[in-house]
Length: 471
Image (cartoon, rainbow, N blue to C red):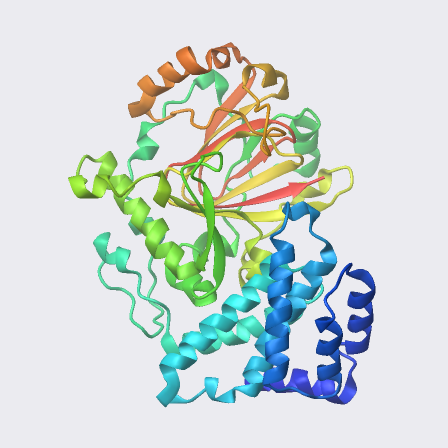
């Protein structure tokens, strides 16, 4: 890692080509409205090789200013220039912190301090990757990968305490081991899958994984009919690698990820938190899976029932994880059918990783979508846009453009009485819907969802999915 940092700084100071300091200075100062004069001071210090604590303090001040700008108003209205400056600040803070504090690395007497410092630097990189633009993404990727490797070598991958609660034993130690911790063994006792009864005349069409682009286009894409392409992702590296928690931890344990907290994204108590990936696995994914299973089987103790509520359901949902943690990007493939859009463009690739029971309420998306199921199973229901009048589209608020008032369809057999009550008393028009499909998305399957079609998604096991929007 030190070699990476010193090589980079040497390039800035000697050649001034790789990073193009003067160009960046001119671009930022000319394009950001009401920019703080500290920006000019920042570049003055860098160009004049004043790489000391004064520079770090200046970067911290600029970082705070950018943070306020990024969190003022709606995200879509934030100037891309502020995002660019924010990612630059994050990167330079990390680079010059390491440069000015080399004892952070390789000093066994300062190991605790080193680990805390490294975690802080990783978080800073991830903030730049999540909230910045693409201008410095490759630089941030380069340094955060080096720091994460350094932290793994010092501390190993973290112990997941809720693995013990799942009766799997203590498979993890402070130092990295290659023993697999297979998610199949964690979710094998989940009975939600057996609680789904599908209507045979409403099943989502299932097609062979070898279906040609031409046949898919003719039978499904052109006619805007959803379908499940069976087992199409089983040759992906992710299909086997991501079931090993050690593999995921080795690549992402200390990386910061955004977690949705709450039963649904439409809930009044819904919120988001930024936490390390390993904490998400332990405190939300494994913990919720354990308690949901206990609750289902009637074995949950009374004091646990009070703690398992909507407020502790955590979901790593609709996040461009592979733009942030690009070491996982090599494990997936873009479905070939994404080229069928009018422009042939891939719009976004998002991850959906959560415990049993996570729900995406009935909503529409503005693009065609191929949802790929890597781990676990999901129940899917898709409604044709012609059924919109029966689906109680929200009339006010930020979600009014694409979300229904129907949060939960109560699709489990044990909740059928709740579904009946829901349909009869609260949303009676749903019973009038004729044009819809439902099905179970299994591991390795693709699901094609046409744009603007209503869809409801509920995980039946621990689940990891990847969505590909295209046009």
